[in-house]
Length: 456
Ligand code: PEP
Ligand code: MN
Image 1 (spheres, rainbow, N blue to C red):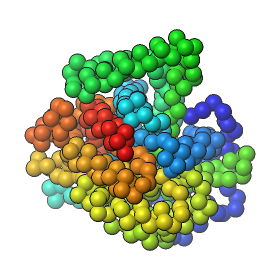
Image 2: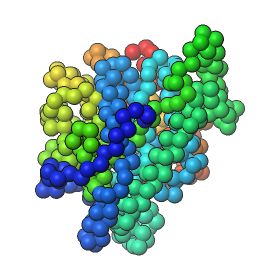
Image 3: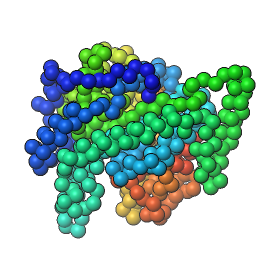
Image 4: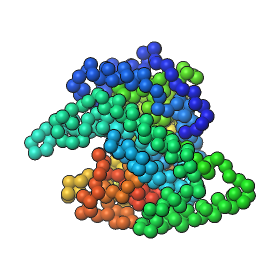
């Protein structure tokens, strides 16, 4: 986020172009019990201030264009599902700290500029494989994220409540405010590379490895300062927000016309993406996304055909604007080497400019004997390695990773320096949805990706 280009986006849409999605099937929308209540909330959301400015979205689009050209790497990550209770200073700081540590490892050891995007300040809605959940013979609506209903298994909490859309907006504002303060107010200063690791260094192999790297950075910084160089980039960090724009009433209500250009932007986040379950070509999500001007992503699972990928490009980026479209491949470790090459090859041959990002999480989920949904760090690392191999073989650019992680020492994924085993999962299993990498596992991944990047 930069201090330049701060023109607010102000106007409502009067052309109707932003509502064409309403005539199309919209997958994964909640069954709101009271339409009138929803309309009231949506009207209020349509008048609240933007969370981000169009100029900032454009700046991220420029950064993503550099990724697509092979000049930068994107690190996108955060919770599977943010919660309202999780919007605390400590929680946000821990996530940012881990993201900054990962980014430093990638920049220093991978020798590549890193675009930093949080799954943060808006990631409150979840697509579900089943609309209901049954426990001990009781069937209730599935939890669809704090933006829609509550996690507790009671009829009252699971009832979709449109007032939660407003809470999601306010919770996003609080989180983004913290993120802006942490990344601009001195906390992200490179002189803090050791401080980010202080509570971590002694107790973990990844922490010790990081500390060694931080010492080298210190020396490089001292050298630069002795030479008289102390650029602004060393003191603040450019950080962007993103979420899956799943609940269309929410993202539509937060779409504004940019006063500079007259173009529509979803001002609830810098970047928004379409999930694997809502990317139907003739569906409402793809239609809505085709109308907004933010940088956008689309998740691509292992059944995606090259024809589908190219049709998505035609619909979502017909002018082939660099940085506009990112494909986030989430194939699974066992499938990436078979499923990804044809997609990348055909997209490349079509002349389209897209950034390719690897989500090594969503194709690698399984259920442990205890019933916990989990992932193996080894599978995550293997999918990333496969992603790099595919791009290396085709001469294309492995543009980044998209991950689910948290800054806390949870026990949700197995493996890593601390060797969490399946029996440990119950110790600190805190996610509201999918299992996240903990801090040590995230750093392990960053070191591995840096090695892959340097040798690619
Ligand atoms: C997610 O990102 O949490 C998600 C549901 O992913 P996908 O759409 O790839 O399944
Ligand atoms: Mn998830």
